[in-house]
Length: 115
Length: 113
Image (cartoon, rainbow over all chains, first blue to last red; front, side, top):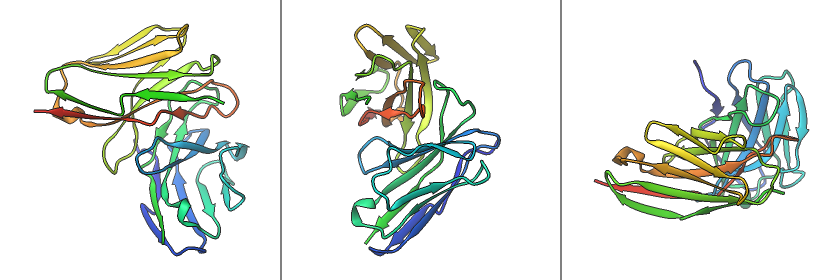
């Protein structure tokens, strides 16, 4: 079946611009996660949704970062007034279970470059 | 919060040899430990995972062991092949709250033909 998809795959933004990154999870997956992966590092947690509810946003680095999942399916990560330190790969993952210990499947990521 | 340390950062092995990657975690409440393989420019791919009620799990050439007392877990790849070359990440989750994964910094495995 179809896996997690993300768009765009690449995004170049000038410093100060706003960007929106989209994630389409595996159909029926209740849980959705956003991670940020800097070059040469492991992914770092940003935020978590269970259906349409954002239950944890403790990993968002600043109030310029905002995520939503209004209908419990597609999610959008928005970054306002982008800065060079925002350059990274943004990964989305989905999971079929609400309780912990179950597999998270990742999308291909969006590589954001802020110039 | 959880902290995951991963060693080594790079590993080169001859084709056919075994490779071992080790991770330690800090949160004794963690109970789920997946391993991901990430090829250059690709998505992290789940290759094997283990839960805290199990000490070892094997899937063909890949095995994972878990020592809850020592808070460490390891990935073992036997009979390595060139296509095993990639970056491998370990991760841990405590299965509570947001069920987020905390990742190690990764191990770049090179299998030399």
